[in-house]
Length: 149
Image (tube, rainbow, N blue to C red; front, side, top):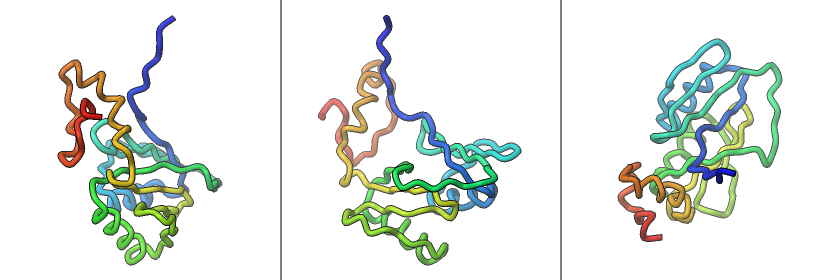
């Protein structure tokens, strides 16, 4: 039997009642770029190899454990996200007791934003095998290479 090796997450899907407003929000707050859209759905690029899938539903469901996290390079970027969420969108940023940013987008999706100092560089390990084949994914310059972990 073949062993399965997961290299990371391909995409995260969220729900909304307004796809175009949701795309505009994620483009504005995080600088995401829409890859494509269709009737009741859109896909936005996250990093180099992942995407955010946005689907329109009639009834939004909320859950405290259901969430995803973006990783940014610096605490300054986290603070910029917090400020934009509060000032421009009037959103409440949850106090997690950590440097990270926890909030609900206008459609009730729980989002976390962490920086490389809040998270272990262990997230780079799945790429070690791929990089051994000579493929580079452009790890942040401030981060150690996976080989150094």
